[in-house]
Image (cartoon, rainbow, N blue to C red):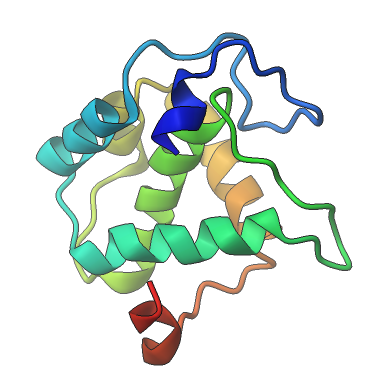
Length: 134
């Protein structure tokens, strides 16, 4: 993921609501550290992102595969952490807080949340066995 985020020459093939006009300048590690600092969540939430991203990268009967790249990774991370935390944790922050921490407008993050859920076919369940594979 870090290598993709640094490749500003890569141009996305299929645009999604997660794609930015320009590649964000903040590095992935710094972005994730910021999210963890201001919206702490468990390791399971971060690991679940890998499962969700793998699911998105595979085509389904309802959509084609999503290519994760430098243009969409930041929005996918912010949205994925928020959705995952809401699913796995009893305590989570407001969408407004996640948006502020992620550098997004609240209405945009709200839209991305619905898109993330739809792209995952509203199936956020991850078995213990599947989680342990990551």
